[in-house]
Length: 363
Image 1: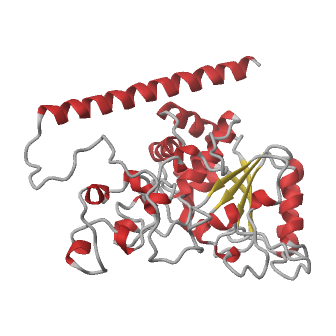
Image 2 (image 1 turned 30 degrees about the vertical axis):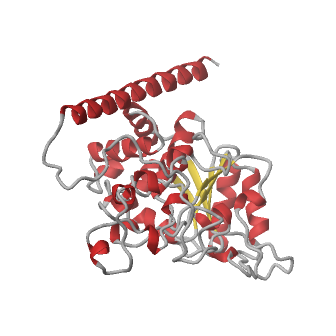
């Protein structure tokens, strides 16, 4: 902690970012304290970060996170042994750092991949250190303890794989098939989804529960439409018809402008970027692009509408009415049930994780 304190980062701030990371993966606050405790020790999780076909946007969003500044905390929470954008060495020295980390931490390091992998046989695309992206990926993945694809490009191909896909770009899980790969799609992906996943693995030796596409359920189980702040307008039939009209200015639903939120699984509507309220596409008045979905992002025209995956209105809030000035006993009761349910769920999750940790310790 002394290293962080010299940079103006207090223990309280350090605990805060670890707790936020724990919350991102659905773990209780005490799990965040345990993450911070382990990260503050000498046993920081080693991370090797590879870049392939991408724009570095996922790395950039990580560096612009502030709660506190992850750019200062990144060396306090993890041991970032190799990252071509952030590391000081280059050339042979950089390659030496990669080889040394792989040998020293074989079976323990977390491999984070940013960018799609070109598969064309001529190997002229994306060569780093004289090696093709496929060669480097397979070599580093073979000794990794966990593999995380950060961003849509690494998860399923993203922009590089858009038609006609001249480089044969694919996601990591198309080439690494002998061990689980956690996909955290997004353009860019939310950095706390990544940080929470890495710290969970480092602290408890487990990965988050994944859906059938390898995405953490804590972030991708629900559609953006379900938790969108404009959802009440959708249920009430209030839609913006074009950019800048009265409905658009009033915050009406953007579905008719081509919003892909009803078919896009992500937590953007709940976990905004760089902790700035409203810092996400719909928050600034633009339709969701569907970047976390391989069948939508960079595949479907921007202004085409999609089928609504879960069309029924949620039961956690009433339909829009002109007058919201009265708080009824019924609404208070519903709020009480929701809060009680969340508290109960948090207690059960904490109890289960505690039991699992105890069992692992005995084994």
